[in-house]
Length: 566
Image (cartoon, rainbow, N blue to C red; front, side, top):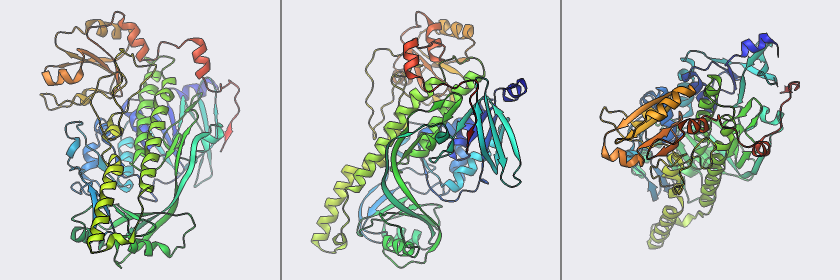
């Protein structure tokens, strides 16, 4: 690349795709002062509602970006709409069981002691515009809609992307230091790089319908004991289930299908799920398939994969967008540290080493949820109004409680993931805590999310993490050696002192070093003998042995690499 392109590319990251993951990465980088250009061939319109379950961990990131409160107060469905999931014969039939943990967009319910931000249920129609506004208001973030990536070329200096204005047809060359593919499951960038998915495709086929039904909310109040975010029905063969969209009159229906549906079937399916001939307006419909796949590698030179371009999974538990936003946060701080000069040469390699195992974990858990759901056998006799009907409903309700609860109270999936074996976490020899999908136990084991504790000033410990490293200090422990080492390395570091005995106990060690993404990098009872070596490990300045580096490396990129065509 020419010197001109090198200057133009200075510190800029190109992101392809302005879905939730691309916008989250733009926000993360912009929040860290990194210039970003987002390339999106669409116009920003959200065509179909999906991916409403927003995890606590994702809401913690929104809290740091300053938009969590707006997400909750201006949400669709409304802030007080209960996050209740119901299994019933139909939406106007008999309840088999329900899962209600006291959570709304305003109330954290059972999550209250674990996080400053409980989960949210946000329609994509409100979530994507929120992320767009948040990213677009940051200095240095440019979102270019109606712009399609045509070709991409990278070398040791950076990335050149030829883009085309969809309306005018005019082309332009954009330069960046790195490029991140957030262009979805059919990612043209991933395919152009020759990176394959590994796993099982199309484990099941489904059809989804976005519809308007003004009568349905009142029917839920009358027949099912109140509103619900999901209603799973089990009295008909297709087992259609309904998901709330705006909390007023818009909903989404999903059915399992093995054949191409007739367009006229949608209204019949909706009325089958509701159990009544309500008025229905079809707004949109589309087929979809459930997958269990993860990309073989997340990086090719200066190009990275994130979100659906790196993993596809069943929407059983809402893991998809949340896993992708986790990718964005992990990659974001590492790109920023590298571009700002304090990240070491091995830091960006740790992105795949940390996030790919989490993707494998989450796609596997989502597939497990689907398999558990598939074991539930629909039965018209569930609607019987006699003792036999009571027995069938009671037994199936108990089976649902046993097999399906972990999907709807997945505190472990949301908050308990950890980067075990990461090259930028320093182990202390203690055993790894359990990793259960429906149970989260706060821990400062290196690689875990640092625990939330309310501090005397009303802030959360999490509110003090993010800009750089944070050294959490308890008791009489002396942080001076670590502080001086950080100053010598040019690593941004602040000190947070805990004075509350309960907080000190939760943090387990007198000294706990937190990474910019809020995960624990190191902990100890006293300062390490060589604090510079610890900081070098955490910022990726310590290279792995040559044989290990060669074994882990993906295909190289030569200085004369030709363009990839899209």
